Length: 193
Figure (cartoon, rainbow, N blue to C red):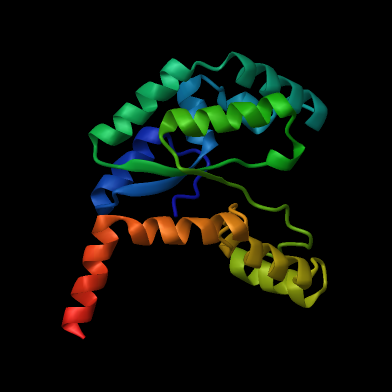
């Protein structure tokens, strides 16, 4: 985990190459810095002064609206040339984003070649200098989050949805078995058994 918020995309890539990694889950921050997001805006500052959350959100929204996907392609090429694929893009604060910003996040992920987007949930208790796994366990123990909701989310994330109806699935079986390739397999199975 390269959790330093000040690491550039190039520094993260260098670390990935040194470790022999061929794929990475990458936060949007180093990509957006490469696209031109200033450290001040990323930190929520304007003219050296801390801005309000609303002002920062508005400024980020404006930046994202004008962000160059051509520059994002350059970022992707930099990683792919080094043999590191950007598999997942982690988008912080996605639940507070406007529809346009969510579209931006998906477009950015697609442009970077990612196959998924991930996000985290806001911490519901005081961190108390604990690491993330400890905080998560404390949240469950203190009923700060609903454990049944976590269980359901896990089940849903692992399910594979077959959108065919039962009738469609049944009608496909005889057609598949009638194909010569499948008949050949059936005959071989009989010979081998």
